[in-house]
Amino acid sequence: MMNKTKYFERGKASLKALLFLPLTLGVHAESPQPRISTEGEGGGFSRATCAGCHGIEGDGNAAEGIPSLRGLPSTYLKEQLYAFASGERQSPVMSSIAQALSADGITLAASHYTQLRPLSRPLEAKDESANDLAVHGRWSENIPPCDDCHGPDGKGVGENFPALNGQPALYLENQLQAFKKGSRPSGPLHLMGNIAKKLSDADIRTLSVYYSGSSPMTGGQP
Amino acid sequence: MKHLMALALLMTSLTTLGNGLSDGVPEESASVLPADRDIPKDEFGKMVRQGQLIFSDTGQFARAYVGNDLSCRNCHLDQGRKAGSAPLWAAFLSYPAYRAKNHRVNTFAERLQECFRYSMNGKAPPLGDPVLVALESYAYWMEKNAKINPRLTERGFPQLQKPSSPPSYERGKIVYSNNCELCHGANGRGKRANDGHLAFPPLWGNRSFNWGAGMAQLDKAAAYIKTNMPLSLGGSLSNQDAWDVAYFMDGHDRPQDPRHTGSVDETRALFHHTQNSLYGHLVAGHVLGNGPVPQN
Image: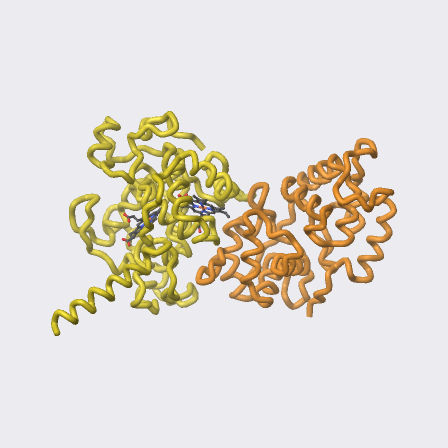
């Protein structure tokens, strides 16, 4: 069974995060919006800040459900950092980190990760229902195929539709649940909020495993 | 007695008609179509699968007959299953039929040929061509294994009531930037996925459907958009918005009508003599059909 606890609530992850908090928060932790840079060129961004959880190469961490940032669209990355900072996208650790970044820092972070070659895994539907939803959708409930917007094999489309391919199953599951519950903004045109509300927990589980490219037998780890 | 029965029959047909007319969204539970895994694993099944491949990725599997970036599934959603997007299986049931477009009775295969000529901006495969046989097999298989709801008319696009104000390019532009641009792009060009595959199809310009296509007619475009767009949010636009954005979309230039006689005026008089076509009209400072066609 996959552990469904949000990754930052888990012991190991929060310990790790704590290690990096002093480095990144500075004295401005309480300001709700990113401030204009007062911290020199980096605006608060250094690779080390993010590497603590997302890994030196931005690969993420499957066991902790921490996403890969590699090759994600910069517009999307920036939007997420702003949403963390404002609290619209809920994550205690990410919101403190995003609040500590200046606008420049956010731009730098986004342009750094967007340049890295994205993860790419061959996807195999162990479970027919995953493939049905991902490739055909469930139009009787107006659920479009995920691949229509996220691209074939979920490899992403343009600046607004991030790749799903290779993301940790636990991360994808947490995000779909967050869209469903409203603890993450529902995205452009509220597309994801609308769709996630129509997905059952079983749909979410099976799609998350599918796009992670991992086998369901190992609990969502590659 | 006879009169009463006739009256009752008339009333039922009127209510069925009413279903589609109200707001463009089918209300009752749609017919149930077979799933891909039900395709038989025999020689016929192979042809059905080939038809499905052609329907889903027309440029790849019927390359010789395609002249743009579209696939049949882009307009006939859920691989030709979805009610409200002229489903292929319901069309299969409806031919041979008289068509005002060419003033004669058309077979199903002839109807398919037209899609290639206009919507796909390509060439009609000759009758008996494996491409047509495959598409017809796919349509037949779907229809034969469908649990059809006889109370619904699921053929075609639901007819949309006329808007209260005449459609407007300017209002359509706003509807477009708020609801469509995200996917189809500011220039209507559509978008490709990171791996190069087409993700969001082009709505105008040289890689889209041509002036002879059904989608270039305002009433059909408005009905399709109202029912199916923005993707997964069908039914969310008002009727007025759907007409306005259809006007905006069809108010841009696209590949020439293959029936073009050499003169836009003459072609308009012969084939576009309807309020539903903007061909040959001056829209946003540009006589449509006269080029230049925006290039992708």
